[in-house]
Image 1: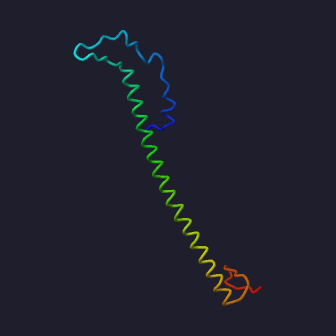
Image 2 (image 1 turned 90 degrees about the vertical axis):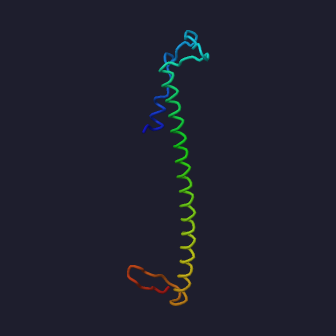
Image 3 (image 1 turned 90 degrees about the horizontal axis):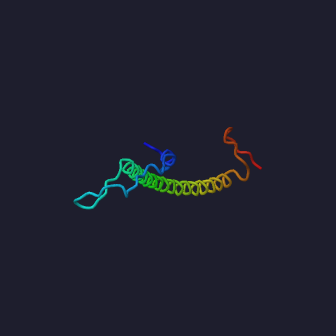
Length: 111
């Protein structure tokens, strides 16, 4: 699948890509003009690029929603952790008094 960068690099349209439509014969039945293969290719490429951009924007919107959800969940977890820390601090202070805890040694050091 081509990336937006690939398409951007390939997006220059050269003057020789177009033909002089004044020289083209008109079709008898409905006054339409036949496009050149180059013009058809340019229009097809343009449509493909537009589709790619649409898909990319949709993908980015989904990612933004996902990030927003994760942000909300992380903030909730942060608030929950602060509350737990406050509760544990109160419980340890009530039980042991003021001091610090060395978790690695599993000891309380009074102040």
